[in-house]
Length: 330
Image (cartoon, rainbow, N blue to C red; front, side):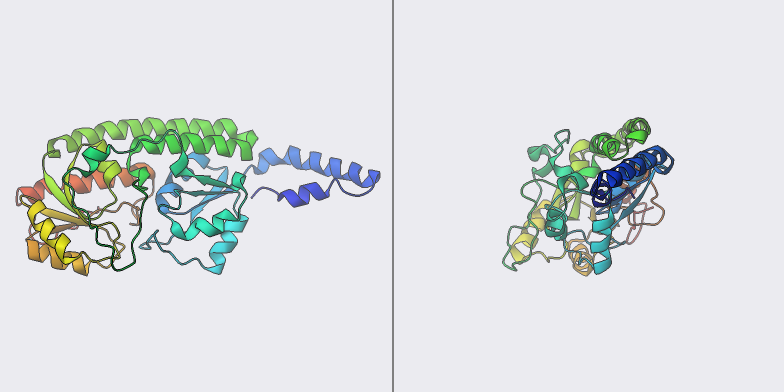
């Protein structure tokens, strides 16, 4: 972790002799910094940590707040989490549209110690008509508990083009924190971009035959992936996985799911209602792990590739080659 600014400023206080010692100590620290050159990056969720790890490399430490199978919508911060936020040189999060629980804690941090990704000007956003045309959405919020994404899907890392943009922007922020390692940060971000470009082409080829195959998702959170690869998501059950669909929406779903075979869920939530819905509508269940919660997901490209392969398995479901409940997370 970089030396705290209050400590550095204190070296300049006191008498002229004290200031001389302070300048000497500051010079010694500056000379030693390239040898240490480590930054402490804390992210809200694992996908952002995977991107950060690729950019930071061996010149820092990256960790994430949310444990596996935790929801980013309403995670309860612990005292130890607050300490980690205070100690981090840079906190990376999507924004309050996703991690509502971080809005107030991050509001107390200086702007140069937090990076809000949803405000990046280079982001690619799903075409609303393409991402939502024909998609069912739960509109009854009478239970008083829902998560409004403000019209924007905050799961922006599901588009590899956004992953490249995030890595590039992060490299520039890290270059300010650790100038001696700036070129390394930029080089690693560029290397990740090349890997993602090749992966994007592979996924495009893999998913192209499935563009007309209708499927549904339980949680509306895949529009970046669906729009980027022009997939045919015909319905979503709910905006928030914590909410059960209302009777009116269930009626609409029955009409929208004509011809669909698979309902995709996520491994972090109680999906008893999804199983009941699948049984009622004669749908098979699949899992999409958009947070990379499985232990086998060690890199950001692996997260995207696993998601693409999970959707591609749907082709077998359509052909009746997989019987019973299909768990599609590798």
